[in-house]
Image 1 (spheres, rainbow, N blue to C red):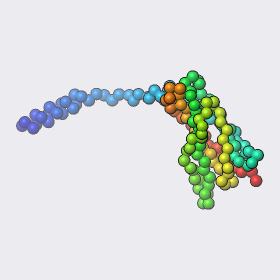
Image 2: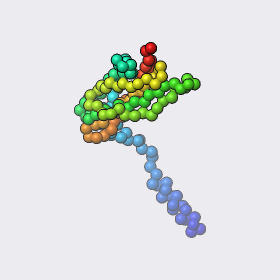
Image 3: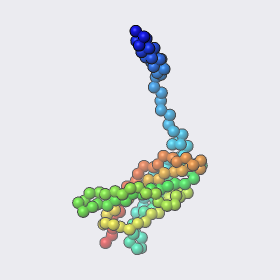
Image 4: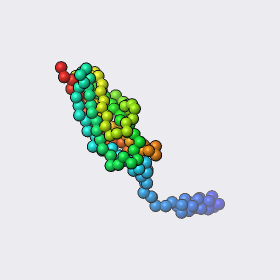
Length: 141
């Protein structure tokens, strides 16, 4: 009987302490640093035959922007024709304007480059990254 009373008391405390679910609060660092949008690329080749990609993007305000970290992943097709993507790596150093030019050597006739831009605020918060942009570059023979 004593155990039943303890169990009843325990269950009453548990159910009395439960509240209805609350909304999840969005982290402020995702809204305090403007999100890069409109990521665009112009592709070309350099005079030495390397791939050249000029990237531009926009932000709603530069007021809380310290730098942009541009990340790139490059992939090509293997011997079976399967797309093989490498990891994303930041391009160094971070830039302070909404543009960057990238160049790299061709490893196959067709290379796929994936780009994303991540902003860092003056308050050192890292903001939400841009959408990923896929750029297909074909080697000219």
